[in-house]
Image (cartoon, rainbow, N blue to C red; front, side, top):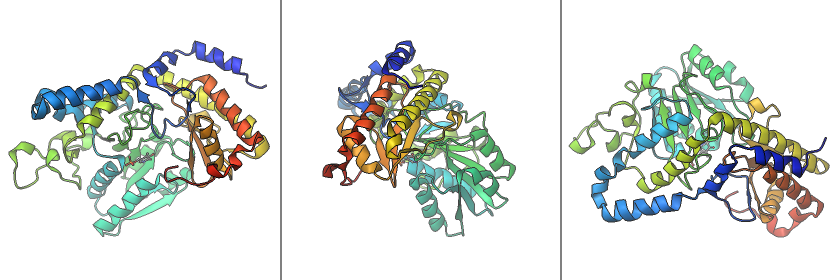
Length: 412
Ligand SMILES: *Cc1c(COP(=O)(O)O)cnc(C)c1O
């Protein structure tokens, strides 16, 4: 039974989340399927950023640290993110980049489990997560090592020697999603701490950090939270650990009394001690607009639409791509899939470039993956039909063979 464009138009008409698309700038002629890499621009963001620049900075000047609440913004916006990931108020801080937050939390986790030397992770975790662990282990010079396994082997790889299990909840490459509750419980059963990377989860799939008794988490502001390029990231520390943990980056804003300007470091209270330096106020203003939109969409509805869209899109792409040997590279079982669909093909790079030239924007992940992110806040059902039709045309007409589509650019 084949799916028609009319079927998908009907789904768009019935979609309760459809009006949210109006809150975003989506350029004419573009089908944007890369919100998992850089979320689209909310229409309210330019005015909000201009207000912070002109009124708060321009007029308020340094007074705005107090008067406009700049200093409290990282924790205040963190509390909003907490609502998206099942965390209590006071457990999430917006700070730094995901990479830097990984360093901070991983360092704290290793210090909290002295005598244990193993970090368990997945071989195909996002590289920065592994690189940060590698660099931290080298810096500590105490024999810490990464134990890298396949996704299905994680629970079995956790032992009495494991200090921390560090995983990305939804894999960037395949969209495969781990069972957060089960793996967290497996880590705890061996006395290890659990650190989740929510880069492809926050705002995209339901996350229950408190319910799963997760210890630590990090996440990204510029993907499904639509915070803009290089938006600040966030981190989560379970309240039960907040007074115990010590972070390896001890900056003045994590101090108990930053404006006492003491000579020695004393950690601040609770989540506050995870801060390092001065918050990026302009970027935080942009991020908050994206998060406010995410908070308007009930997560059960977002997930239901995402599951339906990824399921339909996988079927459409397989149908369109079958004659040219495209293979579905994301899990077939929707319960194990995040909000993306991936195809594997040996000409993936050139095919994606040709799709982008047709206005269908996804991305390429080495060595052979075409990756399409689904953002239920603004992806329409008809977009999926049109994107699959574009893939067919790119292949039928051999557009991918054009020389300009075969030259790799710096950012893929
Ligand atoms: C996108 C992503 C990051 C990004 O880290 P940055 O420090 O923001 O560059 C980290 N981890 C994962 C799993 C990601 O998908």
